[in-house]
Length: 342
Image (cartoon, rainbow, N blue to C red; front, side):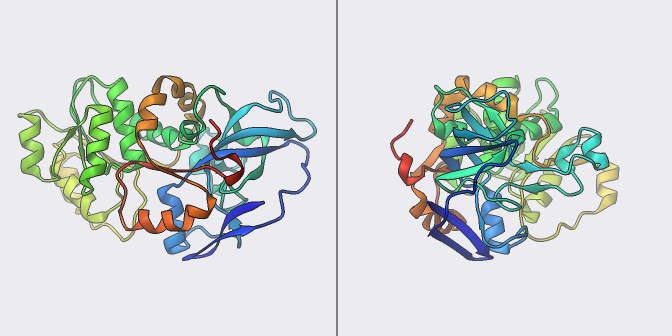
């Protein structure tokens, strides 16, 4: 079968490989119908930060159809549409026992510690799949995992009722957070991104207002309202520093972007302005909730798709995305054998 495998930083190959081995107990074989390229896929390709095995079939955001069930699998049937849970956890550390599996001491991800979804088929433990509505476009189902990440970040941000919220970065997580806030929040949503086309796409789909990332521009948009909730989806230290200057006293800055470099923060400034700095990592139990939202959000999620490609197009898509040449949020891969499928 055809697959896209990461060997080392900068070394991504489209190859014909053997199909997954025979199923073990508790496993399922999935025909991949759609997969999404994530910012963390790009980060891993660029830096090799999370390479733990080589080569490994990349991809942790994907949906498919169950082709076969291993011994002992219950609650699923051949033909079920499913989405993948990206997290591989130990289940026994203090974080896992405490219901905080997203910060598991040995946390790994599908596509890194095991083969992922940039392939025609994949085998996963049944514990790592969630049943999905078959009538929803597979490209939308492939966005369930990043939607769960955005949902977790929005919950962590806890925007006060009626208060403005600013999102820096209109990539997949920032844009999906804006979409969720447009559904759930009663205050104004502001977005900022140096990619004007991408910001315009998010604004059109969500009703958010585009602002330049300066104190003056944000202040003009707020009309004397305090800015108590800010979400960074860029991971860029310079952007984060700017946001710390823009957020109002007693406000919160939530960080969900994965970036490069270190951040110099004056702790006295955080103390004197009583700023809360919060990290948001992956998700805990939000994936089934995200899947349940898919039918209602389907049309708007499709409007956020940037490009649909086959497996052969993945290396070029990585190059394009790393260069910032995108107008939408998510590049969707449809394996060659399933091109044209719903």
